Amino acid sequence: AFQVLNAPSLVTNQLSKDEQPNPEEETAEAVEKALRNASQQQQIQQSLEKKLEELTNLYEAEKLEWTSKTASLEQDLVKNQDTSQVLVDHVNSLEAQLSSRSDTERFLATKIANLDCALKDTSRNKELVEAQMQAEKVVLEEENSIHKVQTAQMKEQLTELQIKFKQNEKSSKKY
View 1 (cartoon, helix red, strand yellow):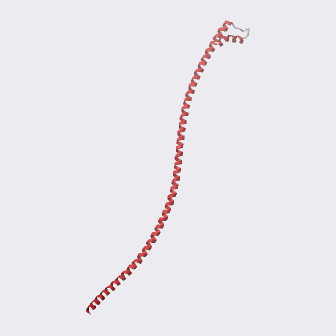
View 2 (view 1 turned 30 degrees about the horizontal axis):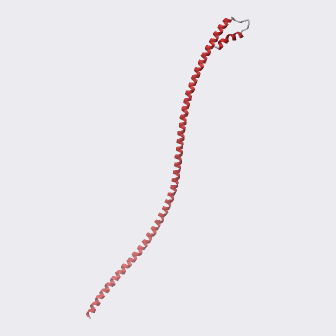
View 3 (view 1 turned 30 degrees about the vertical axis):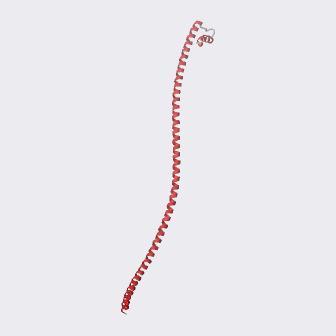
């Protein structure tokens, strides 16, 4: 409305004094031109407002989408961090188990080596004892043989003595 009222004065200022149109025609043309301009400006304004609303809606939709994606990515990040922490803890646990197993394996290897040495010593001692026992057995068998011979000799002597004793007894009874 402001431009429509001031439009005739603008047109008047631009024309030279010789070419000045009729003020009534000028006013009608100015009003018509001002109305067209106002209508165009209103259409442009409406178009811009519509475009602004569309862009605002698009911005809000994209903002919502990006907010959703950001939240989803943050959740994934938290899950990945949790998973990473679980994996780190698991790796640390496995390393501890390996270390423990290495210690256990070293302990068992030492224990096995000690038991192996003890077994070898025991086997050597057993062989020595068996050899000693075998030697003693041979000695005892020889002594047993000697004793058998001595026993047989003593039996013979005893038998002879018994015979002599009986003979002496018979002879002493005769007297």
